[in-house]
Image 1 (cartoon, rainbow, N blue to C red):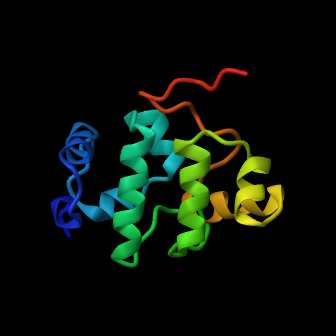
Image 2 (tube, rainbow, N blue to C red):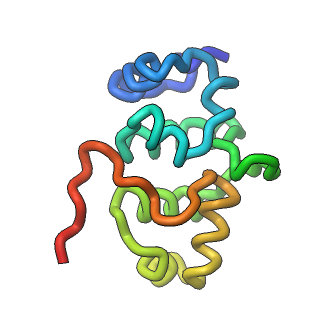
Image 3 (tube, rainbow, N blue to C red):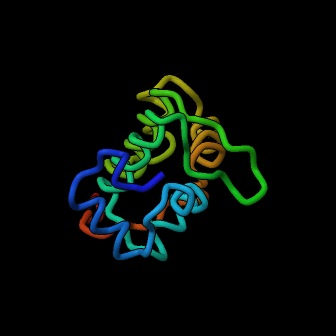
Length: 128
């Protein structure tokens, strides 16, 4: 399947093209962390891609060798809060009603996010 069939925005398609990703099979072979670090995806673009993949019953891979699982709506919300909103694991857990550790496990299992997510381009760091 070609990535244009996912119904993505122009910005997301341009970022995929710049990363040399034209087929969905190429996309689902990369973790979220890999896409941010190596291909320099912005958080909102990556969230859009993950949501579109989920609608097609697909997902980004977990850590290498892990079993691919299609994320639920709650899992997608955790991903958005952590990556786009830049909330801590504890803050995400409070909003979704699960423990900080369970948030970490879900983000690792469904999206391959390990540790503190890299700071995506286009998203300023939160000031305290």
